Length: 240
Picture 1 (cartoon, one colour):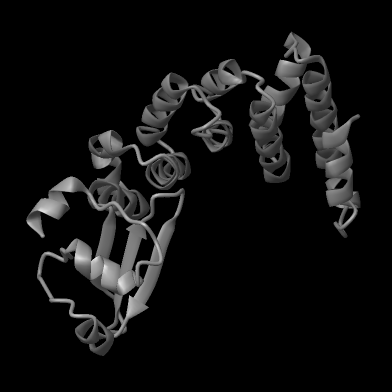
Picture 2: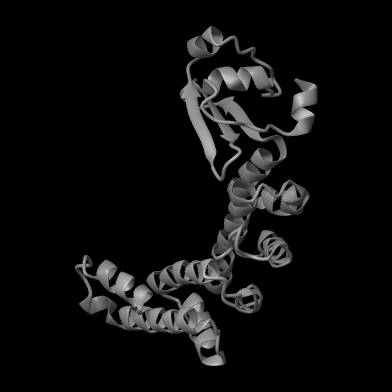
């Protein structure tokens, strides 16, 4: 069938600078062929495993980015790629570690593998790897027990600190530079609901201003118009 190669070829048709990307394109098509072979045979051979690992380790973002998508597809077909990902999370190349982290999918990746890789990512020396791991741990998987692991990185990286706060409390409420207020809420699904409000709008919704930035569940419901199902952290429910 060669379905993955066909999809890549269809995507490439819309690119205008193919000549300058010829090496990257050749690599992507080779990786797509390897993935098609794995899907059709149900077997991840040593050769195809190496081809995929090379794709995730490639310096060109177009190559490793497309390889991430292909690896996610392999997981959907029930192909175990854990060995590849665990090998790459210890790579000397930051882009390889970033690509490996980006392949994690809660419903597809074994949980022990996922946890091991997220811990490695959250303690990674690369800001990009660490921030990506924090994003995935928070928004995609809701791994609240990993919040303490983020503590050290949160001191160095603003984005990690943001995700840690969101993961710990289930929401972030604070004042913006323009004087308005912003609310971000982790939803029950894989995502974040967010919106900004003027002080007048907050008053109309019955929101009380607290120096701690804590909201009650009823206040969050009022601000979101119950558009999303939310689960603030239990300690925040008790404090509210």
